[in-house]
View (cartoon, rainbow, N blue to C red):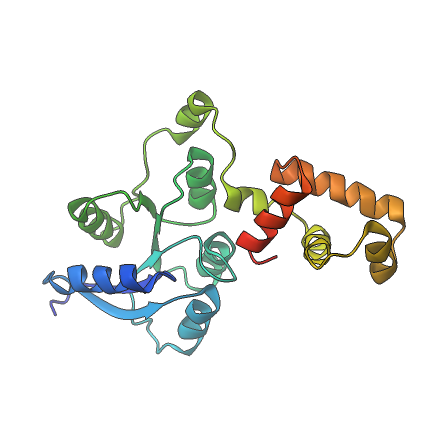
Length: 216
């Protein structure tokens, strides 16, 4: 491998996709896949035990991975491994989400709807020190009027609210949750209303489905 080649770390929980990406990247003379991981925990563990200097240049990161998810991981990467350049590669491409990703420390964002040439160009750009993001996402968000991306809604919840959602999912009533957490029923009721508002949900069936989809 040439001295200026890009060593890639792929983190995505869709095995067929990561295998396909690895095959695509293996065909590039200036790229080498050093590891394929499927969760935030696996990524952090790999980085903790990696040799020094870090044996990877660019991280290709999906946001919707088992905990911690990509949005949670990004600030940790920026703080502890700032030399690792991060290209987020995600099916979710809402403008608000892209802005959040950029603010959290990513060096680029590419939707999974991109073709192979766009992906390779984005990897090479990020590796070369460029920032690769769609142009003016905030204006696009204002024009779209679309609902907030679910991952962003999830990140609105406090630790206590996540705990309450988990208890709701187990079937506990407001009174039972209040007893379990040593809170008043009024406080739990307030939390429940705030949860529904933050998640932009209107009924309990939708809340239970959201909790199931996001492992709460």
